[in-house]
Picture 1 (cartoon, rainbow, N blue to C red):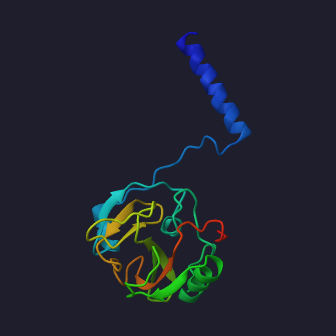
Picture 2: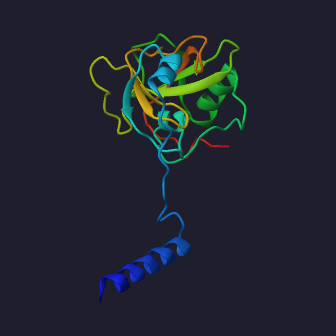
Picture 3: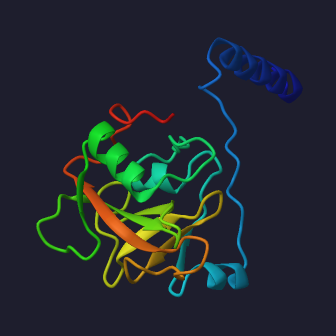
Length: 184
């Protein structure tokens, strides 16, 4: 079979697979890229970790999912209490003080809020496979539709900036609670 016919056959196979199950073949869109100035406006301490994709956000990444967007509060930001209730009751996370360092379960999520008491951001303290992040790295986060960054402290963001300050942490022994946490 010549090259042209082979390309046509391959294209037809892919098309058939997509029609039968659109989830088999999907094109993922890379996340937006921020400038150094934008990064400096968001955080006091950041190191580029890697490029992400647009189909997941900070909450999904913090919970161990890098293929789905999680934000069960619609288009609004939840209050601190609403976020605590959702993480505790729907996802079975334990809630702890933002400064707690010992006695935590393996998977820890840092939750950030603005000065109005609205939750704006989430970060994690382990890699998505559960391994530690490395020496002197406290957390890693997906910045909305942008890249992923590591931080030397759990509280790297500008207090009056986009993400605000750390409000509390949530922790559990198992990572991805997609089956327990409704996304809407």
